[in-house]
Structures are given as structure tokens and as C-alpha cells.
Image (cartoon, rainbow, N blue to C red; front, top):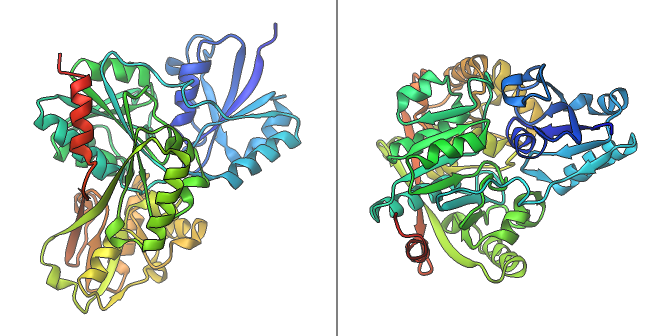
Length: 444
């Protein structure tokens, strides 16, 4: 019987995992190509034969999503499998309409189909949108468990933006590992804070192989989700973080609403800086979609690393986490909140000084506004970020990303870093939830 020819629509993460778990050794299907979206410069590569398996001795090409319609017609594609996250339902259905218009089926996969089971207990931390506060939650979960004597290993959602074969299984225990693996700013934003918090981090491409390595040194595997994607591993305890700064998004973005339905615990974060109407909307939607979930209410506790008096009355350039501002669609982040709380005279709009790849980012995402996204998917983008900061006329730079950006770019102005931590209000809280988890999963 002829193999069904399919294309996998992705963004260098979930697409590869779906292939590895469902299609790699499946003779019913022939994966003709991956398409690439969201992330700059990830098309034009090949998913290597060493990862693709014996059915694909030449690997699998990765092509721009803009070529999808022509690809389906030319290659006689039977179905397209949608495999990336943090997009509106409108976007998903528009992709479906395009695929259907040229005669192919449009497929979204069930939540459990691609989850790998672990020999160790798994806790998953996911979200309804990128930038909701997963990093704060995972850090506190790992700290509480380690205080109880558990060895926690974090497995982070993939960000393989370089040589895929070399990135199949990556382990990060210190900053030298970040340099050795040539991590981008986006990767460092997700790995550094765990390393600083005392945890080993695994990531890469082949998440079944990654799990086998992580299990060797873990009592608990802590899944740190990316965007609003679903866990790659079957959770024994599933957290989802929701954001009252974007009320209603928990019901309108794929696949974040699935996380909302499936979770054991919902964390409503950033309540201290959100409007009450936003909080009320989110709580009502949580109660409607998942009334049996435990609900943890939390503030996002901001700290300034440096002399906060340097902000008062000054022209402040705010640098925020890149993906949160781009496909996450947030209009501000921790840097803006901190700058306003400490009396900034003005928030400087960097767009008049934007250079090269940073200007391209503003062109693609015009809704970013008067903030600077810490974009750094490659050396040229990092260089343009440095040039943009240097050229921007401001008195002080406030950085709201979870990394020390000055390790990667030179900044010739006073720099203040903003930290943020989950600050639960009342009960239930993470400690009470994890006490129950520890009782069900004692250390071996």
C-alpha cells in the first residue's frame, strides 16, 4: 500500500517531537517536509537522517511556511499536521482553510498521543500564553521539592535553532555548557534561571532519548513548557499558568485552552499588577472550563538588582523577553512594571534607533510598541540588538529578561535587572499541592 504523504507544520520544536513519536518509524506515512514559522532563519535546513531514521536516509527538508500551498500541490500531499503553539484559533483555522482549499486534510493531534511515559514522576508546568509566568512557577516548584530532599531535573521544551544532529540531547549544568552549545539569547532565557536555581536542565530534539538521560539523575522530572504548548511527557501533576493581563486569551489560543482543560492545578499569576476585571474574567473562565482544578492565586514579586533610585525621573529603555512581545502579544513586561513603580520619567521608544534584524522584528510585529525585545536567535541579531541599545537616547536601561544580558552584549549606560518570583496568596499554594504529590510519590 502506498504511504500517505504528509507535511508537518512547525516551528522547530513540537513538529520534530510529533514526528519522532508518531511518524519516524511508521511505514503508513511519508513525511515529505517540515514547514517553519515564528522563529527567524530556521527554514532551509534538513532534519538529519541521524534523527529521521531508516525510512529517511536523506533526511527531511525544512521549508518556509509561505511555500505550503505550492508544496501540497506539487508533492501531492494528503494531509498537513499542525504542530506549533501560541497561535490564535483564527490562525489555526486560516491554515486549515488554506490546506483544505488545495485538497489536503488538516490535522491537529490529541493531547495524549505524543506524550512519552516516564519511569520517574513527572510534574509539568504549562501556560495558556507565552509570558504568563512559567519560569517563576517552575523555579519555586523545584525549590520546594529539593527542600524536601528530591533531586529535580528540569526538561525544557525544545529550542533547537542550530545543528539539529548535535542538539539531539543537550545537558546544561553550568554557564560553560551554555557557551559550549552556542545557546541563543532565547535559549539562555530558559536555561540560565534553572542553573542559577541549582537545577540541571535537559533540552534538544529527541525527547525520548532526553528522558532516558534525565531519569538517570532525577527523583522527579520537571517539564518546563514552552509557549502554551502541551507537555511532551505524561504528567503525574499538571500545572497551567494563566495571565489576567490578557483576560480571555485562555479561551482563544491554541493549544493553551487544552492545558486549561487538562490541568490539575491552575496558577493565576500577576494579580498584583492586573486589573480586577481581568482577574475576574480569568477566574470565571477557569471555573467554567476546569471546575475540579485547584486554583492558586499569586502575585509576581518584582525585585531590582541595583540602585532603583537611578530610575526616578529618568528616560528609561525597557528591554523585555522577546517571544513574550512578539508572538506572545504582551504590550509590556517586568521591565515596564518595575520602571513605572520606581518613578521613570518616560519609557523611551527604541524604534527610531532600531537597526538591521531588530528593525525587521518591529516590521513583522508592529504591535510591540515602545519596548525593545531581547531578540537574539543568531549572532547578527545579537549584534543588531547591541547596536540598537547603544544608539537609543536614554539615561538608564532596565532589563526584564531572566538572563544577564550584559554577558552577551555591551551596554554603555547604567543597567538595572528586574527579577521576579511567584508569591502565592493564601491557600492552596505550591507547598500544599506538592505535599500531596510527595505523599503519592515518595523518594525511592
